[in-house]
Image (cartoon, rainbow, N blue to C red; front, side, top):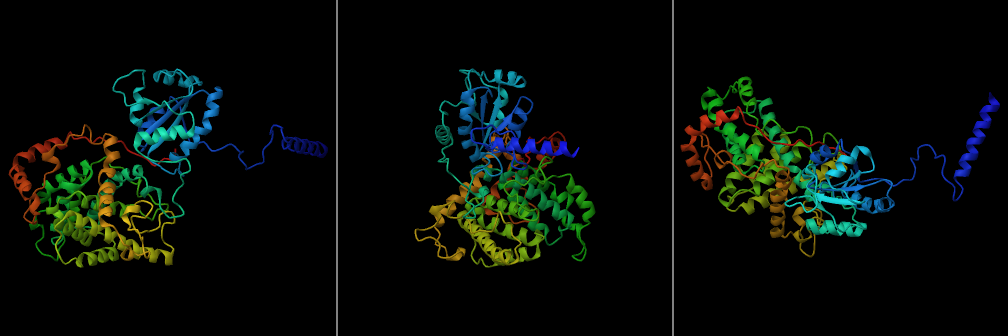
Amino acid sequence: MSHVYWILILNLWILKATSLQPGSRTVLREIGTGGSDPKDYGVELNATNFDGVLKDTPATYAIVEFFAHWCPACRNYKPHYEKVARLFNGPDAVHPGIILMTRVDCALKINTGLCDKFSVSHYPMLFWGPPTKFSTGWKPNQEKSEIREIDNWRTAELLLNWINKQIGSSYGLDDEKFENEQLPSNISDPGQTAQAIFDVEEATAIAFDIILEQKMIKSKTRASLIKFLQLLVAHHPSQRCRKGSAEVLVNFDEFCPLDMWSSDKHDVPTSNLKEVLHDFQICGKEVPRGYWMFCHGSRNETRGFSCGLWVLMHSLSVRIEDGESQFAFTSICDFIHNFFICEECRQHFYEMCSRVTSPFKKSRDFALWLWSAHNEVNERLMKEEASLKTGDPKFPKTIWPPKQLCPSCYHLQGPKDKGTNQIDWDQNEVFKLLMSYYGNTLISLYKGKGVLADGRTNATLDDLVTSTNAVVVPIGAAFAIAIASCMFGALACYWRSRQKSRKYYHQPYYLKNI
């Protein structure tokens, strides 16, 4: 037996030595090397998962390459395709969340019907369009189709140039992440920013869960909660959060009247209140939980809710009118002071609020104040996390916006120090970025995924802000609220009847490394 064993070992050694000679075919590979094949970034799809993957991707656009594995031209083109795909696909993507690049092998029998659906007449054949529109297929000379055949793709350079023309970008094949400059991809990429709309919804839902769980609605906090609800009804970036907030606000006096507190020494019977409020989902019943996207940290204990709450406040600050700026300021300050459960955080935030001595008259001034306050918080936490090593290594606290994201936000001499107070900011440019970043960009994916349905809204339900006996409303909204109050009796029955059959249209998203 021992002779046989040594003969086998010798034969294996000879085969391995032969395989390493120049020009020879590798028969054996060293264990653990996994070979030297380059990494594939293009997502291989087939008829069984084609519709599902394209439906669930958070990417704004998709490219599908139809090819045949036996086709020499397809094999030669694959390195070009992968060179572009590595910019957009996978966990290490340079520009994630914008384009999902996929491939379908038409030489496999399982894909015959799928390839026929797209009238594939030659290999390779590339198509471009919104991911959800690929389920309908493509026909030559088809009118009003959002799926388009890519006509200039022969090299990686040509394909990327074609993409840049479609979306007005200037991506390059040599683009790299801003890792050396500590610029996370989620703050540099519009597609990633758009995903924050789902985090804003989740943060809103969690905030109200905490209020109920911690029994935080009391006689002295009731008014500040109503004011914050009014702000959400009018300006929350999510349509379904506006609807849910309005539903709670319309019924607030019914399930939480002022006479519930006979004395300040006794809390409201929150066990009953929690059961009543549980039926009123602040952002609907289909809001995904635990799937942080823009606010996803590399550790479970980092980012998440606090990040989502900051994005919510910034999104509110860029949506208000000038006449509502002081109301928005006091509403947010009071909400954080009364309902944010981190004691040190809320005390520090309220101290920043207390430093404001003059009322805000312009929405621009309030948006810039909130931006400055956020940077002050980041600057303080930067030092603490650096000394205690408690920060997220992939998402360290930074002064925002970094120069790579907005060079025009800095005057020519640039920052004098790392502190925000020592940076010579161009506040006009900063405000433009805030409006774009937390305004249109934030809701672009939301609209693209059809969550807003056909784009129409019921103004009566969406923008209803009900006056209560506990709130002084902003001047800019007084007229609208007066009309809404007059219509309250008629709307109440209509509203409740609709809740039984009301549905929210939402496509849940999951964090997948495709």
